[in-house]
Length: 291
Image (cartoon, rainbow, N blue to C red; front, side, top):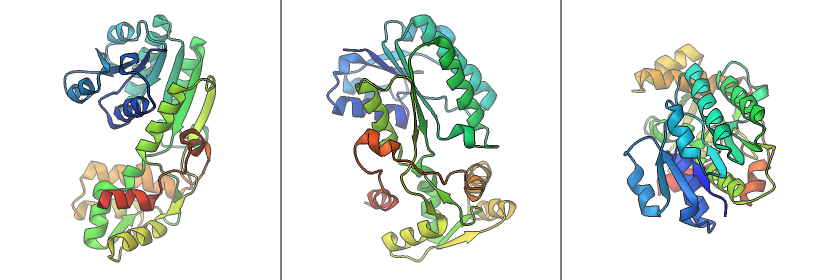
């Protein structure tokens, strides 16, 4: 049985991948969780998987961690500095090459070539090209934005105020639940036949914020209206509603404006093909959160 190492194992995506691998019947002894330190490793230890220490900012630690591994589940760096992320990713790719892993599965960005101005697309395309230079068989899991990005605090504020404030106009978004992406990654890791393939993992349907506001209203039994504003006005309104300034700016310029420009509207059935069922719907995701 192949030895699999999962980076970012204490994160929600990495941890979800390990959980789904175990649910698929993979022996814990064949799974290695890469962590940066002590925080969060207790839950992994309970699962019985092997734990190794490694940090994207420490190339030697990556080389040591990847030695003897067959498949590398390379979860992209969470750092917000895109230039730094590329350097971190280069260290991981070089370490994988030197450790002679037999396959790299990388979490990339959906429809990266078609994106413009986000910055993320450059990080992920650069990393894909780096991986290809190694000659190692790869699988690029081009993940869509997490559906959780429009839930959480955003949802709480919408329900409490009755207003869902965006700068998304009538654009639609194709976001997916992170756990669905984790299941897709586990499927690729557990199966053969995915070598040198690229999957765009987005929802099979897209919704607008007008539609999303109606869904929230129905599930929470409270009227919520979508308020579309100019980007600068949306940032001001969100801050006035108690949103952190940095998060308000990210939500508006990193999510809502691209949605207005139709950058997150493309749909695909590739995620559903990998997980063997329909994507988790917004309705079901919201009901689960409410419960």
